[in-house]
Length: 323
Image 1 (cartoon, rainbow, N blue to C red):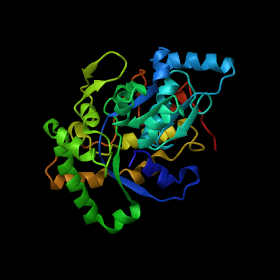
Image 2 (image 1 turned 90 degrees about the vertical axis):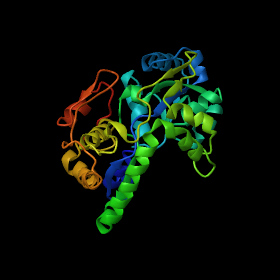
Image 3 (image 1 turned 30 degrees about the vertical axis):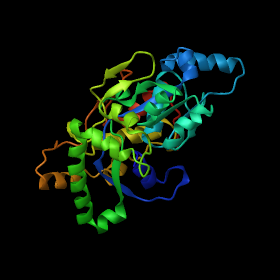
Image 4 (image 1 turned 120 degrees about the vertical axis):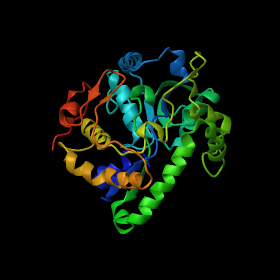
């Protein structure tokens, strides 16, 4: 599931029932994108700052706010969209309408004018270009290189009752992750996931970005992206606790929690690198000994996981909610 959902479930965000979950395995890094409509492309919008200027002009003229879509409020796509908009001075909760749309419905909804942009995983960004509905204004790896995306999560109750089953699942995931990450296997992967029982999208649209071959649909043509989607290399599968701290800092930044969350207590409950390391040891995989690392972002921002409150409060665009 999307990074962020196990945290939302464990914390009972947005009034949902509390259902503790754990993350012992990260499935992939990179590979998502933000798509804007062809109308915005024709207006020359290529940066969040340029979009901010347009939004301000339209607001002054009394026009309704622009709409942007993501897939789940505390999920990855919501955070990438919020971060990108915020970097240009756009408050996603006040300056635009931020809506939730299932991934396979993104392109169709943009085609009928329901939204002006969306953030989603592939192949829907590439599909928007193929359908001449939109263009890729940025990839998520350009926002945060080697960012975590999807995870294998379990309810805490299931994991506690079935520890051997959890480890067996993770060992199988290791084998599949190694297979998928070999570039020579990606054509087969694209063929499998293109089927109607899975993504139901032409394999040709899926394969390009799986191979790191990107055409953003902006007239610049195809180029190689060395930071394309990864499933095993670069230490993908280790659930870094610092990534969990970053997610909580964004919940804090956007007012999804009131007051400072108990970062350590929540992250220690949800993130389970100890389970990952036990599996890695059984399979002879070498993994880092540490659980925390700093991160840097496209706008020059840096994240120190030992100072999450300071980090959340430092953003110029934020909606901090006090307890």
